[in-house]
Structure formats: C-alpha cells, structure tokens
Length: 288
Ligand SMILES: Nc1ncnc2c1ncn2[C@@H]1O[C@H](COP(=O)(O)OP(=O)(O)OP(=O)(O)O)[C@@H](O)[C@H]1O
Ligand SMILES: [Mg+2]
Image (cartoon, rainbow, N blue to C red):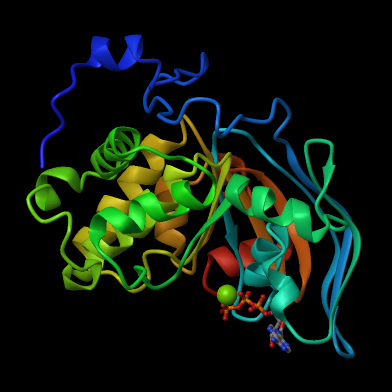
C-alpha cells in the first residue's frame, strides 16, 4: 500500500499536528489526543497490600520527563506492582488495596473513576512483556486504538499506521502485507508492532515490563535502540532484570528491595557510586 499524499499536502489538509516540543516523531492525529501540560508522574507514601501481604511500602518516586527510568531489584521486590500502579492495572488483582498518592500532573490516579480510566490508560501506555498482537491484521492492530478513541477516516488512519510503523522501523518490512494477520510476524516484529500500537494513541508515558525478555538478542537491541530514540517524545519507565540493559539505556534508576525503594537517582550516580549498602550488594551480584 502506498500513500499518495505529499507532506505539504498533509499539512495543508490539517492532518499532521506538530506539537512544538516534539522534533523527532511528530504526532499525527490532530487534536484528538491533546497532551497534558503537566505530565509529572509521582507517588507519595504509596502503600499497596494484597490480602494480608504488604507489597509496596511507603514508595516515593518522581519519574523524570523524556528520560528512560529503569526499575531494578530482585525477583518479587515489587517492580511490576509499582509499574502497574501507574496506570491502575493493579486493580485487576483480587484483594488489592492502594493507599497514598499516585499523580499524573494534577490528576489523582488512585481515585480516577471509571470514566477517566480510558483516557488515563491512553496517556500511560503499557508495552507487554510478551508480544501480544490483537487477533487481526497488522493494519488494524495500529488503527484499533485510534478508532476506539474516535479517530475516523481512511486517509487519516492510513497516515497513522504508516507513521508509527515507520517509527518502530517496521514499515519497510510489512508495507506489502498490511492486511495479513499480525500473528504471522516474527516475535521481534510483533513486539515492535505492539510498541507501535501503544504509540499510535500518543501517550505521554510508556511502561515496559521486561519488554525485551522474550526476544532474541538482536531484536532486543532493536527495541532498546527504539526506546532511546523515543525518549525525545515520550517518558519511558522500564522494569528490567538485565543490569547490563539498564546500564546501557537508563537515565534514571529506581532500586527496590522487599517492597521498598532503597535508592533512586541519576543512572551514572547509582551505578557508579551507589550510596546504599544493599544497592552495592545487588549491583555486585551479592543479592539476586
Ligand atoms: N496477584 C497477586 N496475588 C498475591 N500476591 C501477589 C500478586 N501479584 C504479586 N504478588 C506478590 O507481590 C510481590 C511483588 O510482586 P511483583 O510481581 O511486583 O514483583 P517483581 O519485582 O515484579 O518480581 P519479578 O522480578 O519476579 O517479576 C511478590 O511477593 C508477589 O508474590
Ligand atoms: Mg515483575
């Protein structure tokens, strides 16, 4: 499929809306997805319990904007729970209780009602651990979320699909088979498709929970490289078990242990000069 519209034509048709502070990946959908002015993502005295277990203990974090934040720590320390609190995916856990504050700018995420949830989850997108394309075509995987959020018109959707497939480096690989099932793509291609699907609704944040763990090393590095490019336009929060990956791409690091945030800060500082004994032990392989 090709799109026979030149860039100036697109602009004159008012289809592409360039948000002033974005340079690298202009946002395609005009006005449907207004960006919040204040997108600081913070928690204050956040406590999460599941049944009688106290899972997150007094967590205070502020996620920096347009950076890659990596959450690290041993298995079971609460990384996924913290990540899933940011878009309230923790709600799906039976017996979960959230106390404290989680805010996106001025919006209180903890008390967001059902009506605000769809917009919240559009703004804070989740890239899954395992690639999970929807059971539909490559094209529809990208167009689906846009249609749900009211984007109409074939020409606009064609542009959105091409734009985000290009953003994740998949366009050249799939442009001749856009209407074939997404399930026929390779694992690495499926993961990039899922990333494009999350981007197509123009979130402010991307949450990634070990999103490269199911990929081969080359696909994994491709997704890592993409995250590094995407941080110009998005803030990325990533859980990773791979310290080397965190050392390669993190700008900011949150180290957790037994449900607490032990240390957080600039990645160079935390990796090069950890302040806490537990962080030192974890980084040197003394805790796993
Ligand atoms: N649905 C649930 N029901 C009961 N306990 C849960 C549930 N989900 C998570 N937990 C518990 O919460 C704690 C934190 O789990 P979480 O998945 O956040 O850890 P994690 O740091 O992401 O671990 P991993 O690195 O193994 O993925 C664990 O003790 C876990 O057993
Ligand atoms: Mg986890």
